[in-house]
Length: 400
Image (cartoon, rainbow, N blue to C red; front, side, top):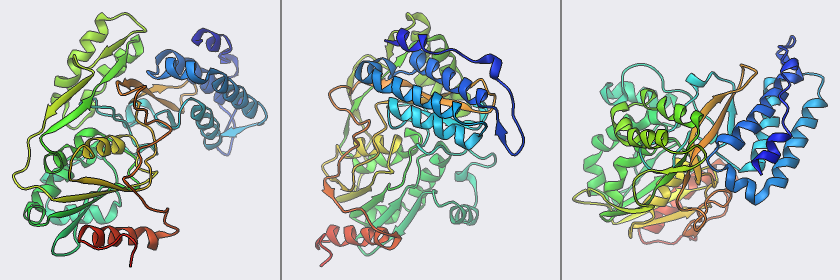
């Protein structure tokens, strides 16, 4: 099946012309990126074999439409080209295939330290240079939070209830999450009801939320591992990951053996992280944990946010409230590939979960335990927190 798709691709190198004024470019540059991306995904994306087996015809139709859309335009700007590429990528799967107008070294990557993770669905910015958040004065951290709506936050809601908000699990927030828990340990211990808000959380890196698990779980975490697709490019991409993360030593401890196994394996095969498809990992527990935890979720909770939800819901004390999540987790651990234009970079998945096919998340999402209607405006969205607080404290979800 891959061969049939590859035969349809002719890289139009003769048309790689940098175009014109007003931010436009020759259609050949966008077409070259499309054809290279299609070829590269088929050869290197960890989910490609299964996706081609499931719906190759739909992928081919989307490719032909993208080519036609490019040909119909006398010139394209970068935004229009990316829109066409992203429309084509959605024929493969709804997430964990993307394109950014950045050089590969500046595109955020995902940590491979544990289960499937990725960059946020909507992209994200590289971690800013400077002092780690945990080492910054409290006033400086507060100022940064005020300027950054995605920064982790803590709020007292009443004598029994606290709110923890995580707008994103990007690796750059890992130190802030640890600091937030350290700064508010007394309140976390004293309040039996927690609301964890991960609505609109596009994902990030698993290590960012790990400090929460000892508070939420019951001592054991069922864990499905991932399989890495072996190709020369994928080996290279994994070798480039750890130096870019906030804890490169821990990354190499986890990823180093995988890289060695990939080097020894036959191209086109999969290398599993660890020896068991499902493990039952011990979790160091906090002495006093919350009695009731409600996690607010919605369609904008994706990728690593969904991995957090999957892990947290194994606890007896956790309930999911809201709407189904996005559905982008099965094929993950995104890595960058520069496209021929020199302007855009493809982001593709290098691993697949051992949950598949028995427990698919991609295109489906994780359903809540308690479904809430989609809020019609910002005020209704904010009111969901008060609604859940009342429920945790013994009242009704009806709002009456």
